[in-house]
Amino acid sequence: MPNRNSRLSALRAWYRTPLGRKIQRLESQYLSRAIQVPYSFTLVQLGAMGWERRYLDSGYWHRFIIVDESTSPRTPFRSIAAHLDSLPLASECVDVLILLHTLEFTADQHQLLREAERVLKPEGQLFILGFQPWSFYRLYRWLPGRRHAAPWSGRAIGHRRLLDWLNLLNFCCEVTAWYDFRLLHPCEEVGRWRSLGAPLWAVAYAIRAIKRTYTVIPLEPAAEPNLGWVPGMVEPTIQRRKNARR
Image (cartoon, rainbow, N blue to C red; front, side):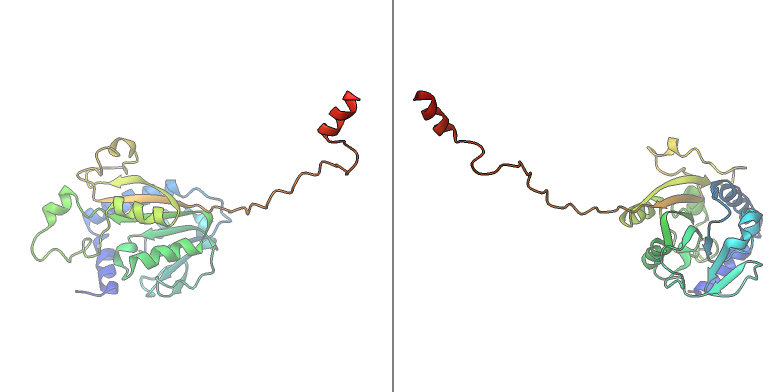
């Protein structure tokens, strides 16, 4: 089994093939429309692909950081070499976090998601792009000797399972796009697929998640009402009745 760096190198090479360029174009179109935040926000991408300029507006370049376990491919953006399951970032310091097929090539997927939750600010956005593990196209390509070839060499996660994992981390999330080799634009009309599951020919998907935080307000014990009553100011009811009879 090849290691992570070699599998990522094979994935980057696959993106230069005719089919890979189609998915790259669809994913770039989606990210360029989905990332709509102020230029003062901090954007971080885990894992470098080498074609970040295709979807990243130039206004974000000075606030964009790439964290990768290796220094390749060369990128003009600021980069940090570090393990992705232990990010050298302070808690709640990132506004937008992008996982461009990173989750499928990491050793501990749950730990990576926990780190993503830690570094994101409240209401921060998380974009996860992943390959669909079960689709007609992948089953058609599931041939002996091709199982570990790009782009299927990673541990693909189904969109339903990934949504469950994110919900456990208090993310509000949904599938926002599907990718198909036959499409010219990403299919973002996901509502019609919710009752049927994923599109049968979908190769990849995109998930947008928002970090929700709930502030617990401690309840203080209610103070006893002060009625302003002083002994002797009010006579007992029985005593008033006796005085009335007299």
